[in-house]
Length: 110
Image (cartoon, rainbow, N blue to C red; front, side, top):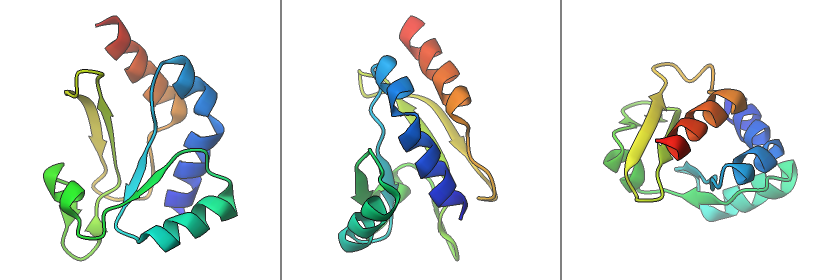
């Protein structure tokens, strides 16, 4: 699935994120048991947070009727301020590691 490819891509690029002093978290409406199994199966190197009530999705404006949540990436600065986001209308693609690294570099120099 696209979600699996996205998380595996970001997990394998953790050194890039760490080099930019960034933390990566995955958030989805699946439960903790599902996340633990998924993390083990794919060897993910970032935490997955369970948003079963979709409260985080609602707060960030990505809860969607029918599909549950939209595929989205948020970059939040060390001050807690949202600095960049990408919300997909269709979840068929995801933002590449290089795109995120470029955006993170911009945040660090701003």
